[in-house]
Image (cartoon, rainbow, N blue to C red; front, side, top):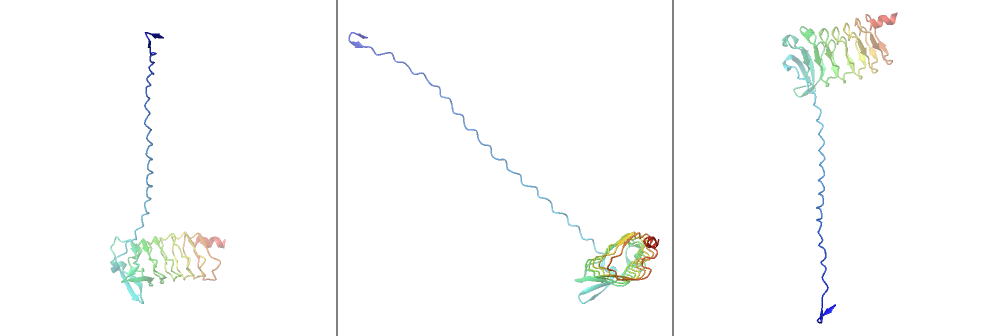
Length: 231
């Protein structure tokens, strides 16, 4: 309304105050957890080479770049020595053969283990004859024949592996090995000499390959296996 010619202004209405709601800080994305490095598998521990027996105990011959062991001087070996490791290399040349009677003689009956290196391809006749205490010995894969009476009267041997490459087993090769209980003759063998396993008193299991074309007399005479075959 008007009064005294003046216009009265309408009362102003104050706008309500708006309280600002603070915007929350964005939640930080956690750092990805680092994948642990896989644990490295330790490399298998290599089996250490057996320590070779003192070279002074061997007599040998070097010829055409190869070594033949002629004799083991058992009478000179320490009294406590029971295991012999034949050297693989002598004077820079490989040991490829063991001569006849190499471990035959006084003192050899005390030996319980002989390690023959894989470089050997020939073992002479009666090489270990009379080693009565011998429990462990190996025939390398390169050997193709077991000569006459090579292991005669190795009475403590209970088993021995004949390599697949052997083609002949000589006369009396295992004669009188009283401890042998079983032996597997490989299919490569075509010839077995007379008395090869004679008087192996505990030999109850034998397999003779079909490829054997020559077999001597009395090969298995005196073994339980042979007696069973006769009955």
